[in-house]
Image (cartoon, rainbow, N blue to C red; front, side, top):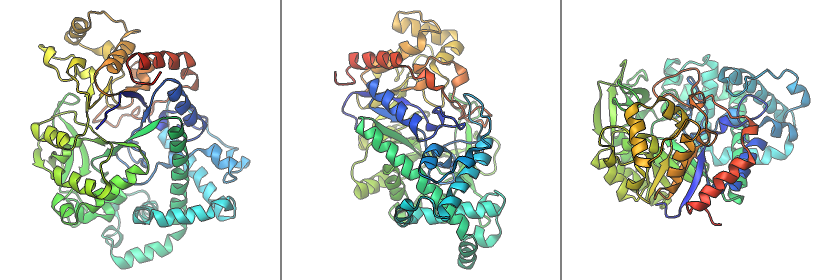
Amino acid sequence: MITQRSSGVLLHPTSLPGPYGIGELGAHARHFVDWLAQAGQQSWQVMPLGPTGYGDSPYQAFSAFAGNPYLIDLTTLREEGLLQDSDFDAVPVFEAGRVDFGLQYVWRTQMLNRAYAHFAAGAGAHLKADFEAFKADEADWLDDYALFMALKDAHGGLPWNAWEPGTRDREPEALARAREQLTPTTERVKFIQFLFFRQWRALREYARERGVQIIGDIPIFVAMDSSDAWANREQFFFDDQGQPTVVAGVPPDYFSATGQLWGNPLYRWDVMERDGFEWWIERFRGSLKLYDIIRIDHFRGFAAYWEIPFPAETAIHGRWVPAPGHALLEAVRRALGDMPIIAEDLGVITPDVEKLRDDFGLPGMAVLQFAFGGGDFSVNDFLPHNLRANQVVYTGTHDNDTSRGWWQHADEQERRNFRLYTHSDPTEETFAWQLTEMALGSRANLAVVPLQDLLNLGSEARMNFPGTTGPHNWTWRYPAADLRPDLAARLRELTERTGRVER
């Protein structure tokens, strides 16, 4: 339960500025934390931090436990002696304001491989003991992940269900042979994970010292092509060849007339329940190593999930199937105690979802961009006067247009409803800040605003178009100069005025 009024900013680390084409966990990340503290913000919300694959979505990671190597700060590696000046002789020209994930995959992978080669040759000797301790502490997931990535590399990037049957089906002899043959690769993968976690923990501690907590995501489902699915195949609906029989998605909604076909494998909840939800307990435990507050993405899937027969072209022909959310959350609570959780309860929300959320005292979410649609909009649950204290309010999320872009593209009914509700007539220049004022002024104890809205950016800065794999998804970055002191001062004044920071 969220009991204190506060506010924060939503920004994925890939969107940070920096010299090497993508946000990193170094100086610019620390500068962002400093800016948040100056602005009176107590939370930094990020999206999942896992290693991304095809489509570059942080919600489709190769592991539910691993970190994204793209975020490792290369300048820090150079300072620690893991990279040499000569390693930077052929730095590519990166596009300003956008992440080129294809270029990152090639160039940054080469840089991290060089860092490991230098380490294996004796550089960074002071890290050796910490690396060995990391491997031992994280072995439960790290060993499977490292072998998965090594096998994936050996198979030219093919998904695990396209490997030869021995490794696909995890036959003991095949795995033993692979471990022996691929040891150099698995050690490199483990070392790169060590670098990520070392830098992330340092950044999280830096934030904690400045009164900033990290809010991070648990996507309810895992990717089809992930070490989680490969190593825990019996806990998912797969056939004998490793093909899913049913997959995840959502029915038609605000975002899509045909629904969203996510394609994630679905859990065999009966199997998970028999072993006390051990995999889920470990997943929450791992998330607590990354975040101070956990946001469960698609929380409604713990009450019931949309099951789509595989294969399918759209998500239309699915069905709702009950899930054992109460038993799961009880098991997690018994193992880990009361945890700071936000339930993402957007979309098709039914009484069973609300009951599950409320039985555990979890705050749900509200998005102000959704508050002004329809005819009799006065009954809309997302209007500021209808919000609850134990709730998190957003102007928009990573799946929405920016607020300026939303106002530019809103239909006349939505514009009319907003004007009636606020007794105002905003312009493109003023709307995003007005919505920010409404969020922080609401009764919801936690208000979160995407950085794009604070910067008053249009649709060109949108982070994601749900249900698509377009070339601009997940790629937006802000220039360092945009993080201005006067904006921090303006946000701090609003935060103090709305009772969300101690004066």
